[in-house]
Image 1 (tube, helix red, strand yellow):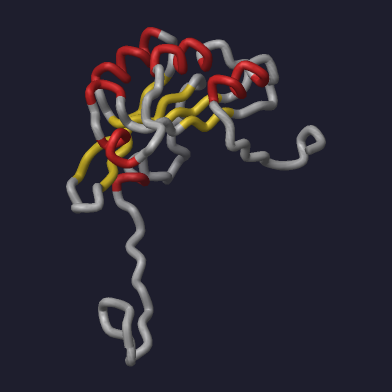
Image 2 (cartoon, helix red, strand yellow):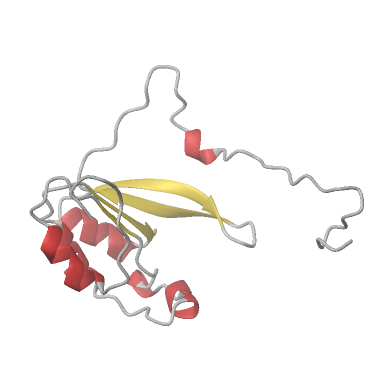
Length: 144
C-alpha cells in the first residue's frame, strides 16, 4: 500500500509489527489488547490468544513518534503502567452486556483536548439511544 493512502489491517503479532513503525510520525497506533491486566479475566474468557506482556507493550509504545491510543479495563496495574510511561489517562463510562455501568480507560501519548465552547464534557456519558424499527410481522426475537 502506498504511503498515506489509507488504513491497512495486519493479522500479525503486534510485538512484531509495532517496532517497524515506531519512528514513523505519520503512523498511528490504536491498541485494544485483551483485558487481562490487573488480574482481569474477561480477556481470558473471550479470546483464544489472551496472554499479553502489558509491560512490554507500554515499553514499546512509549517510544512511538506518532500518536498512540490504548483502551483498557480500569485497573490499578494499568493506571500505574500508563503513569510510569508518561501516558495520559481518561476514564470512559460504558455498560456491560448485562447493563452494569463500568469504566474503561482511554490512554494516549498526547493530552486529551478540552471540550470546545458549548460542547458537553459529559458527551460520552450519555450514549445516543437507538430504536430498532420492526415490521409489524416481526416479533421481539426477530422471527415472523
